Image 1 (cartoon, one colour):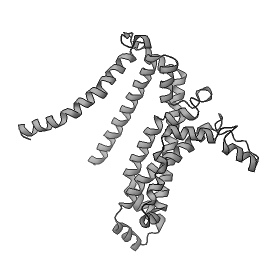
Image 2 (cartoon, one colour):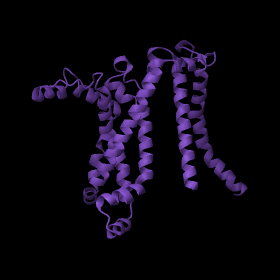
Image 3 (tube, rainbow, N blue to C red):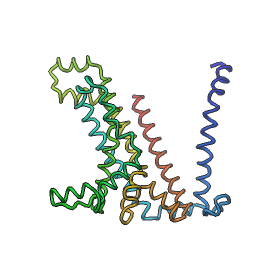
Image 4 (cartoon, rainbow, N blue to C red):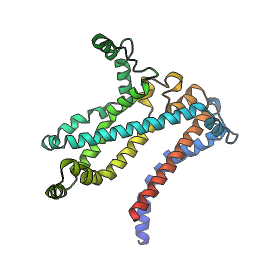
Length: 289
């Protein structure tokens, strides 16, 4: 690369670098300062650095670990269900979508609704006293299901999350499934492969990179979930449905523990960075083989 090319690349990269420094670098530095400071709303402009007590307070808070466990369990279950349903729909509906590709737009409609609006909609639909779903469950079956009660609220949230975001996984799997060369399928059929054998040993291995990426994307999105759960049930009874995002929000705005909330967010960022770095290193190692 010549000096002129380096100068051109530097000139082209300058706006993006400046944007990252301004909108990501400065807030990150500010968060790091707040995380080691005694700070209140009245002293946001003049925090007093006190050390790592905020990190100790966050790590010593049982609510922090409950929120971590809820976020991890919720993210894993929802990502697994969404990938399984999305893969099934992509394979099962493939013949239909070849003839009527416009049907994909209909299946994508749940993604067009804001998550907060979804939470509000299901809050009205599942309300124990005025919701239509409990009303008709009692009218037709004599049941009074407490969908938002302590015993059922986790699985209710899982179902709601999957109903909205399974189309995302389906879209990626549908594109990956359609991209498989037909000559591979024809060769497998000529060798006597039945549909299930073809799916297991030919199609799914070719789709595995897309499946892994989709699972990881949905896991991250489920781990940081906030708006739909917050609108639907908030932190729940005894904090049973408080995700890490809700924990940070309540510590910051409701309890005024700004330092502890920012420290929890920094811990979440560091853990996410380590996980991403590990996955990236694993991918590079596998690609080098």
